[in-house]
Image 1 (cartoon, rainbow, N blue to C red):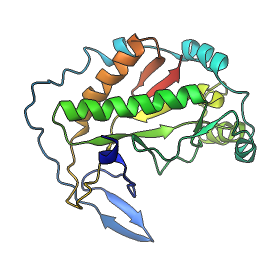
Image 2 (image 1 turned 90 degrees about the vertical axis):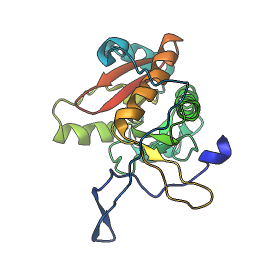
Image 3 (image 1 turned 30 degrees about the vertical axis):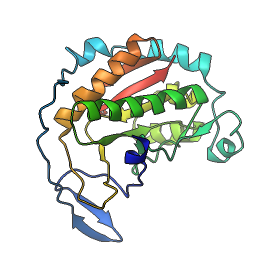
Length: 228
């Protein structure tokens, strides 16, 4: 399975959306296919809000317990690699290329959780006969400088964000990264209406195992996750 997903994708966009490339706007057309039948049905969860209810006041406790002292800036993060793990390259998940308000570092405990989520998601797609995709991480560690910049544009941004401790990451549920075939054949794209329920099953199971807290964020279109 690892060999199947050991790829390096150049970027992620929606079927038919525009992407800026070297100052030239190109339209990327991506065929979306229907999923073949499988004995392993996609059930999803009965309610995103009920299954993933963990608010800031719950997650911040875990973040402070398992996290690092907040990092002032990106230069300081480079000098604290004994505490933090770089998660910018991994066969089981992608980092959003548009991520500008955080940097791809986590504490080892959270890094292991993120990799487990990515691996379980791919395994689940495989047994359900769904073309393989990777999850996309849209937010990771925020330095104090990142938080300050973010608050200039979003007054609702939390000064006490769990992202400051390296324990927390966001996974978008409206975009996924299709796995490229080793033989060079075209990627197969599946709607997020199918992939999100599969991801929700994976996250529900890990939360029930007591490994993480999760909040289903509607405005940000992501699952906000803190390691336990």
